[in-house]
Amino acid sequence: MQDEYGSIFFHRLKWAYLLLVVLTLMSPVFYVMYISFNEYGFGAGRYAFTLDWYKTIFTDTLLLGAFRWTLLLAFITTVIVVPMGLLAAKFYKHTQHKVAIISLFLAPLFVPSDILGSALLVYFKNLNRAMESLSDWIGNEWFYGWFDLGFMTAIIGLIIYTLPYVFIIILITMARYRDQQTEAARACGATAWRAFWDVEFPQIRPGVLASCAFAVILTFNEYTRTNLLKGGFDTFTTVLISQLLNEGVSEQAYAMSSVVSFLGIAIIGIIILYTLIMSERLEREARAKAQPLMAK
Amino acid sequence: MSSDIEAESISRNKGELIESPPPTGLLIDRILGEDGLQKWVFYLPVAFVVVFFAIPLALTYVWSVFERTRFWMEPGFTLFSYINFFTSARLENFLFSMYHSAIAVVIAFAVGFPIAVFVRRRITEVAQHRVILLFILPFMVSEILRVFALRPVLQRNGLVNTVLLEVGLIDEPITVILFSPTGVIIGEVLTFLPFIVFAGFLAMEAVPKYIFEICEDLGAGSWRTFIDVILPLAAPGIFAGSVFIFVNGLGVALLPNILGGPGAVNAGLIATQAMAALDFPLAMAVSAIMMTTLLVLLFIGHKLFDLTRIMTPIS
Image (cartoon, rainbow over all chains, first blue to last red; front, top):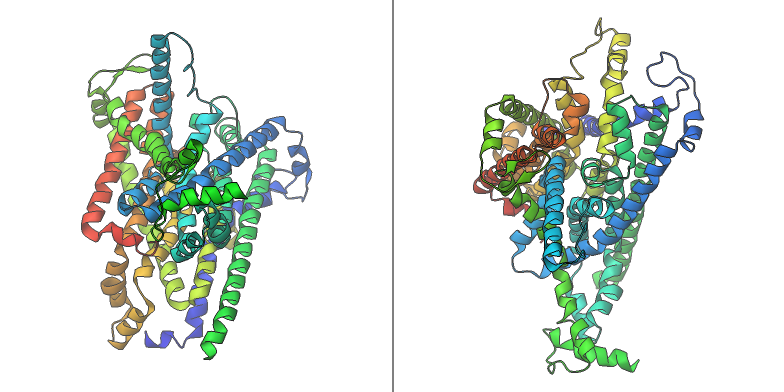
C-alpha cells in the first residue's frame, strides 16, 4: 500500500472510522439523554420537549438520598486512594521486585467485579466471626462488628477497585520525572517530604488531578462491589438497577442518569483540557529554556 | 527554624550521596524519621492490597470446600460444591459464556485494534495521547448506565429497529439482539472496547514507526506486515487486553442480567445467584474456578509472549 501515504482520502476515512466508533460507544448515553427530554417518557411514539423530569428529580427523595450517599462514598474513597496510589507508585519506583509489585497492584483490574465482591463479602463475614470469638475469649466486646457490612466495607471494596487506575495514572506521569532532581534537592538539605512536595509534586500534579477525577467517577459509577458490600444504604446505581430489575425505570431515573453522565463527561473533559494545557505550557517553557543551548 | 535544621540533620542519614552520623535526637523524631514510620508508610498500599485482595481471593479456594449450613457455612472438607457445579447445567452455561466471551474478544479486537495501529502510525507523537483520550469519554459514563441504555436502543421498538424499519432494510423488528446471547455479546463489545484500544495503544509502543517504513521498503503488503511484524511485537499487550475482556465477559453478572435472556448466564451471574440462595460454598467455588481460569490464561500468555515486556514503557 505505497500510495497510502499520499492518499488523503484513506487517511480521512480512518479518522471517520475512529470517530464513528467513539460515537457508537457513546450513542446509548445520548439516547438516554434524548429520552429524558421527552414529556411522554420512553417508547411513547410521540415526542415533546420538556424539562419537567429534571425538575421532579429534586423531589424524588429516594434518588436524592442515594445521590448524597454516592457523593460521600466518592469523596472519602478519593481522599484515601490517591495518597495511597502515590505511595504505591513511589514504592514501585524504589523496589527491587518490580514485576511482583506491579502485578499485585494491577491484578484487581483482571478480577471481575462479582467475583471480587463476593469473595470480599464472605471474607468480611468471616473476619467478623473470628474477631467476635477473639473478643469472647478475651472477655469483652472490643472487637464486635468491626467488619459489619456498611460504609467502611464499601470503601474498602472501592479502594481495591480504584487503586490500579490511580496507580497506573500516577506511575505514567512519574515516568517523565527524573530522580536526579530529588537527589539534588536532598543534597541541598531538603527533607524527603520537602523534596517531594516542592520539587516532585508540582511536576506530577496533572497526573494526581487526573487520578482524583478517575477515582471520583469510577466510584460514582460502580455498582456491583458497592451493592454487595454496602449494607444498609443506597447509592445512585443501586437504586437505578433495582428499579430496572423490578418495577421498571421511572422517568426521573432517565433524567438523573443523563445528569450523572453529563457530569462525568464534563469533569473528565475539563481535566483532559487542563492537563493538555498544562503539558503544553510545560513543553513551551522547556523549549524556551532549551533554546539558548540549541542556538549555540 | 532551629527545629527544622535539627530535623534535617537527623533525616539526612538516608541519602546515598551524603555520609552522615548515626541518628541522634529525640525519640519521637527517630520514630517519625525517615528510617522509622516514614519508611514503613510506603508498605501501606502493599499491605492493604494483600489483606483485602490477595488473601480473600486465595481463601476462596478454602471456603469452596467448606460445608454448607442453612444460612452460612462451616469448616470441613467436601467437594460437594464442585460436583454441584460440574454436573449441572451450570457447567454448560459456564462453557457457553466462555464461547460468547471469546466471540466478544474477537469482535472487540477486530474493531478496536486497527484504531490503535492507526493512531500510533499516522498521528504525530504529541497528538496521539489526545486522540486516545477520546476513548476515555464513554468509559467515564457508568458501565451500568451504558448497559442500561442499551435496552431502549436494542428493544423491539428501540432505536436500532426504528431506524432500520424507517430506512426499509427490514420488514419487521429484529428481536434477537436483546434478551439473548447476541445481546450480551453486543453489550460486552460496547462496554469493553475502550480497553482493547488502550491495551493496543500501549502494545504498539513496542512497534516503532520506522518498522512500518522498513516493511514498506522491503515490499511487504499491509496484511503481511500486520501478521508477521506487528502482531508478534505487540502480542503481550494485545494478550493482556484480550484476557481482560474475556475474564470480565465471564465475570460481570450485570451484562447477562440486563441484556441476556433465559439462555445467557455467565460465571458472575452463577456466583451472584448462589449468594442470593445463601449457598456460599458454591459461590466461592465459582470464584475459585474463575480465578483458576484467569491464572491459567495468564500463565499460558506469559509462557508464550513474556508478559513482562508490557511494562517496559513505564519503568
